Length: 99
Image 1: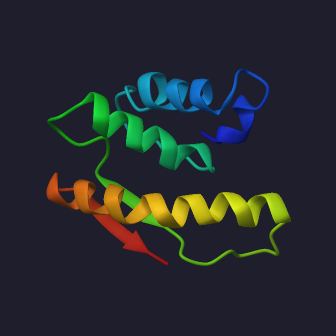
Image 2: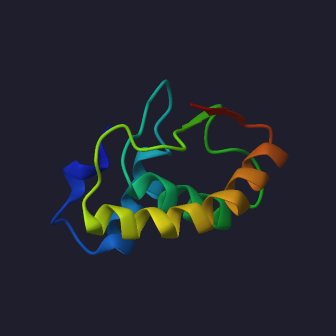
């Protein structure tokens, strides 16, 4: 599932709520990709003090394509948010794969 499909369905908070509450609640195998996924993961962890939202998180440290100014700015926020979320995911038993 690609979070870009949510563009225009609400503000960033609503988009991350949809991913956290609806997409991450689906049983079975799934992959969620996109900038909203990290904010959704933070919401999921906050709203669910026990358990883990997924088995594996794949995290790319570097952009694979040139970024726009807006994407670079958003990346700064993600870089600041990721260490806290990563530590909590690991504490809960999620595997983190960095590439």
